[in-house]
Length: 215
Image 1 (cartoon, helix red, strand yellow):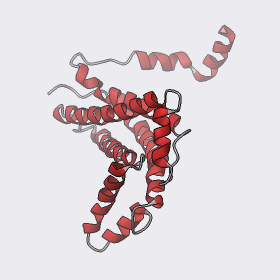
Image 2 (tube, rainbow, N blue to C red):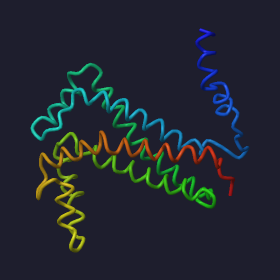
Image 3 (cartoon, rainbow, N blue to C red):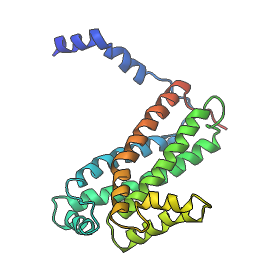
C-alpha cells in the first residue's frame, strides 16, 4: 500500500491538496448559522442518492406513475423509507436554502468582492425551487396534476409569448404525457446537472474569497 500511495503522491501531490483543504483558516466569528449552506449541500446529496434509487421503480407515464409510487411505498424493499427520506430531505433542503440566503444577506455576503458568489447562489436557489415544482408532479395524483396545471398556466398572462411558453412547458396545449415527461426529465437530469455545475462554480469562489465578516 505505501508504494501505491507513493506512486499517486509523486504524480498528484495528494498530501499538498489534503493540507490545503484541512488547514484553511476559519474566522472566529463563524457560528452554526454559517453551516446552513453545507447542510443544504448535504440534503442535495441525499436527494441524489434516494432519487436515483427510486428511478429503478418509478415509471414516468400518466397511466403508471401513481401505481409505481404506490409500489415503491408498499412493495419495494425499504421503498417507503427511501421515498420518505427523499420527501423530508427535499423540505429540509428548501428550508436550509432560505435560511442560508437570509444569513448571507444579513451578514453582507453579497458585497464586493463576493458579487459572483451571490449570483451563483441565487441561481442555485432558483434551481432548488424548481426541484420542488417538478418533483411535486411526479406521483401524478390529483394534487400533482392540478399543481402542474396551475404552474404551467401562469405564463399565459404574459402578452404575445404567453401561450407559446405554456405549450413549451406542457409539451402541448393541455397537461398530459408530454408534460410529465418534461417534468421528469427536468427533475432527474437537467436540474441536477445545472445544480452540479453551479455548485462547482459557487464553492471554489467561497474557497478563494473566504467567509464574509460579521456585521
